[in-house]
Length: 141
Picture 1: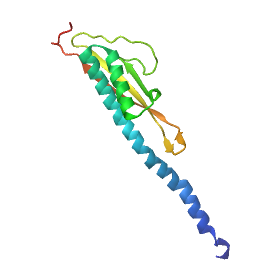
Picture 2: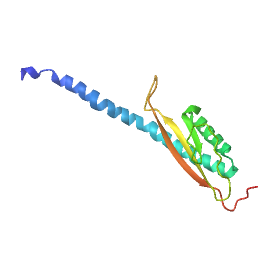
Picture 3: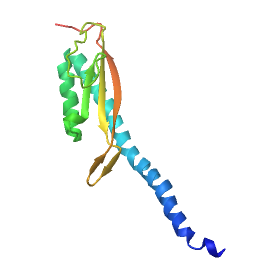
Picture 4: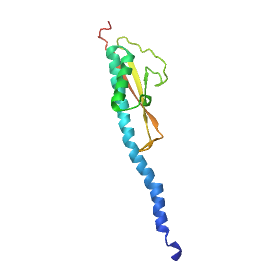
């Protein structure tokens, strides 16, 4: 029994380092991921709706940019893609703006894995899509 003295402190330190710290990081990382995931879905829905109403993807881009600015996100943290185009590629894609056409928008938002007072560590892109149909009986003129 004398040879085992003092091991409890070492075991406690290892348990905290190996079990508790990763669990705390996972719990603290879920909030920003959830928040920005909801934002991506809302931005996709609002941008698609604005594009369908105005018959212009540029209006949808403007709505997504305004939403991200109001949310306090850097413009580099939000990417938008239209009608199957990959978000953030910079290419122009023409969506069909005819009666009954489906306009699809994909919004990607950067989510940091860990946020510290000294900055963000790591991160992933969260992607959400929304499809909105142009009304069959609307005026296109």
